[in-house]
Amino acid sequence: MSCTGCSFNNSYTDETVDVYNWLNDLPDTSDQSDIVEVKFKTSRKEFFRNTDGIPLKRGYKVVVATSPGHDVGEVTLTGYLADKQFERKVKNPQRYQLNVIYRRATDNDIQVLEDARKNEKNTLIRARQIAADLRLDMKIGEVEYRGDGKKAIFYYIADGRVDFRELIKYYAREFRIKVEMKQIGARQEAGLVGGIGSCGRELCCSSWRTDFSSISSDAAQKQGLSPAAQKMAGACGKLKCCLLYELDTYMEARQEFPEELIFLETASGLAKPLKTDYLKKEIWFTFEGNITSGAFSLSLKEVKDIIQKNKRGEKPELKQKVAAATDEIGWQTMNNDRIDRFEKETTKKKKSRRKKGNFKRRNTKTNTN
Image (cartoon, rainbow, N blue to C red; front, top):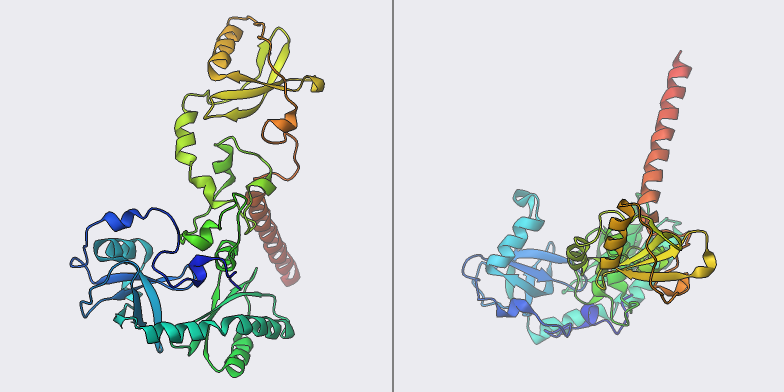
């Protein structure tokens, strides 16, 4: 269930997050298109048509047609931007059913919605009990009642396919509503449940972020961040969404660095690269085979000078550097839980499935002969 502190999931005010909204500075383009993007309780967004030409702005609460009944949501995009968002998100527009917007929501519509939302917590608890009694390999993550209180969406998480036909019958009898089951991933669940991130702020996925793009370990490695998966994982157990926020800045800073970090030959020994700080333009090294020496940093200019001297066969003396323990430079160099484990697990699963399939085909051929 969503925590009571998450404004995005429980607030009915126009301002959900205290951040600057650049969309408010854009001119009104509602006359260019009647398509409107509407956001509901969770990160769910749908598109509707404003056929009656109702004056709408971002943040307005509206009553929209659904199948069946109606729902209450908040306008997020109108006009030209909504039309472009529709083209970007909807792959097959001919098959997408664009329902209409009835009217702006009244105080009575908001009250009916709030009364329906009060039943969500008890419904969620009971829904989980029923799923457990039926021994289904799934987890009910959230329940969302629609504006008329006659239908609810049950968001669930499962590793594979689940036959929930019997479960829907139980839910319909128990709660006396129409039931819709929707499967979500780990990132969507974190957005629904909410929480506080390692930065001390409310989770991005539960406060303002609604588009969940896949994030690879390459984004962390290009920023010279910790290779420890536990530090880079968010509340959902996946790589943090904020790894993409400053990626462009780091990519620009990386252009000044050598494409590949190499060992440096010095008068004191062979210096092994450990970590790169792209914004400070520093590279941390340690002498190979000398664990007690600790780690030291060299500026990008110093590294380039040493590389040029090494090419001429010279081994320069290093200026006196303040050594630091390897676990004090921002991350530990030795860690078995690597950040790229997210990609490796997927690859292993695919390979094992292929091997099982080939093994079955071979056995079938052998038996037929």
